[in-house]
Image (cartoon, rainbow, N blue to C red):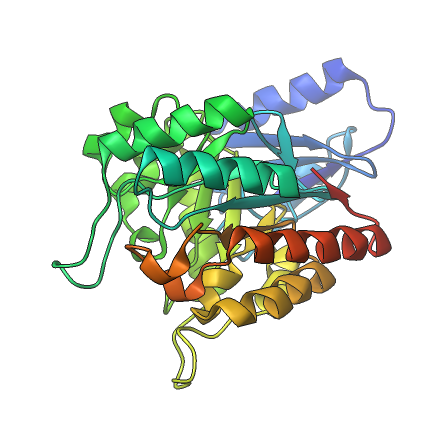
Length: 337
């Protein structure tokens, strides 16, 4: 249920209303936006009569919410949420590009790529230390050593970092990580979602290969319900009957998610297609459809990459793409952050 307050209501009157609502076992999500002051009521509201709420002098109107997600619901929070990762803002007109290799392979590789993507305009450095792979025989990352290399490279360029967490046992290793990525295969690993929800670290949540948008938002709700509201959603392609590319980018997910939730939404065009030459047109489509950022794989030598070389851009290709994106973002009135 959401309660919309009247304009120019005194804080004491609001506090009195909130006290009465909490006494009935409800949690209150307070959102004071540019156009309205809304109280989102989370809990068992079936026993709360709308007429009782409407009788309070501070209340303009109220209505029940049918969607199972509450904290992530745009009806609770009409204004776009802006998630801050280090000094970088995502959402609310702020466009962020996360770039780097799929897998961290060596200090030289990591430092070179970090310097090149930073120079091109990427504000967040990505790199995989723990890699979930379909085959148990594939390279699965340098693990804790890879994390150290990622943080060392980022320290030299001044970028915040994002990297994937695969299970709760590794969480202590991520204390210096600026943004934790929950990959597509773990989107419904609910114990992992609750664990990152108990941290204050921003979370990048990727959509599962066969997950609906409501399931994605409900996974974000798991994180937010534990107290961490710094969640960014990522569309990275879904599995369909099409076989000419790795996945099918659901470009329509962006405007729909923007209607469903106030959380920022980015696109990963690298995993969406799995083909390097498709990254550029898909990245531009992401800007046009209203995404809040991109995650792009960049490797100094894709032909010899230990993971996903076929979908990785070279630093020169990334330079060209970023030049085009900057002009496009200006046209749409967004700021490259």
